Length: 612
Image 1 (spheres, rainbow, N blue to C red):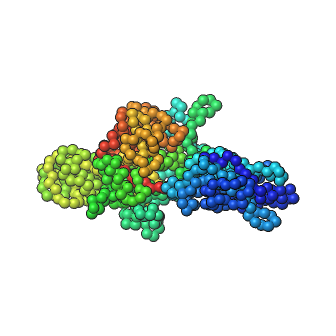
Image 2 (cartoon, one colour):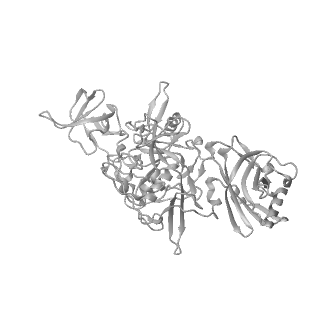
Image 3 (cartoon, one colour):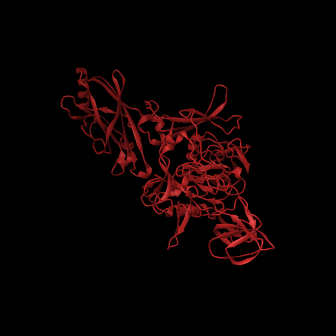
């Protein structure tokens, strides 16, 4: 669609002529309409069918005889959907004070259909250049590069905009022949420091007082309405889910990720996070991330519903499709974590300027301990073992398998209540007591640490880090518990076929093993070597936030510092790592892209997400 010609009305021409008398034209407002043009445009005194009235945002004098008049309209301000067919600019007559239709244009049959759904937000920034000479020489033109701008492509409309005072935090890293995990702070991030607690004590972090990090907050969200009921620290906030789902609010911000060569041919990657709209930046709308890994409940009607709450055992051993359905069962707009995870990665990177998230925040739950029963006992709540490693402690959630770990045929999802020395004169060891119904223990039954109850880091609130950094306890990023480690997390809307990723950003269209519209092919090929440390992440200009492994060959202290698994065929993506016994393979940038969509595992879970 397009507005091919803009007409100055007869009333507008008369008003413009008054500028020759030294009188001032004051532009009052703009109007958007849906009506067809009948007759001559110059005779118009009002819109045919007015839909919206828009206040003037700015009048900028660009030359002695030229001004730019700008306004904005949002589809959500309209009472119903409509065709964007008419634009009218109104000015005030300096003599009569009447509001006069100064200029008018109509798109006719090329009008754009505008849906007023809040789930499909549209925001158009319109600029009209006004040149005033005399009554016979007045022109108004619409800059087509600006009139069709939405928030998604706001940078096009802002190329010539005057930037106001805001903050732009950046980092850069040499990606050619460089394996260092560190980034250099630039722009407003230069000289800043970020720390995370490793033992629960308070630490200094400059970003705690800088937007958007300062406004990343844990909260209770009403599942039905999506409204925030209480923030962490406020009266009414409940971590156990009794006052709504426990989520972490990520406020709106603007970001840019790009790669540019310097004069010597060295290529640098740049990531910026800004607190205001900037030319060339993309906007991340406000969204909510589950503070905890998904746990579930089953209703009387046998519907399984996902939750984000403290004190619950995470759901595991189920498929991605099931997790997706559990999230949808919570209510309208609820879903699994998707491409927004890449935005969290950028927030973390700009804050800490270091790929090694385990070094910065803590190891997370990545260790694994087992112990075998030394004696057989019936109808008991204990298991006698030779010794207890670091990974078995009071409060830990455990399972007991017949002969090995990754099995719960003897006991599932129990909690260790006490550990005591044991000696019956023949066997010396440790008695590990657990809750729940008594069980029968046989020699060589195996006790092992499984999916842990959520809420271990509740005392940290919105802070980052951990309470105990021994590879067996949870880690937080800005109130998000176990952002990595503990459970591999599904990323929805991301499918992989023969090492090539396909991305979709419409939650209603998320589907396993789909590789055509609305899924879009990412413009690079993922690394094809499995079980290796990531050296380089890809960048696609159309979807620059999507950063998947393209080169391997680094280590736990170089490159991205995290591990990557892959396989040929149709695959899904997990991120973050789990409790598999090798602490160094996990982290914010660890990827597992080798399972089919039907795959299930003890160490694979999911996280809730909600956004407009």
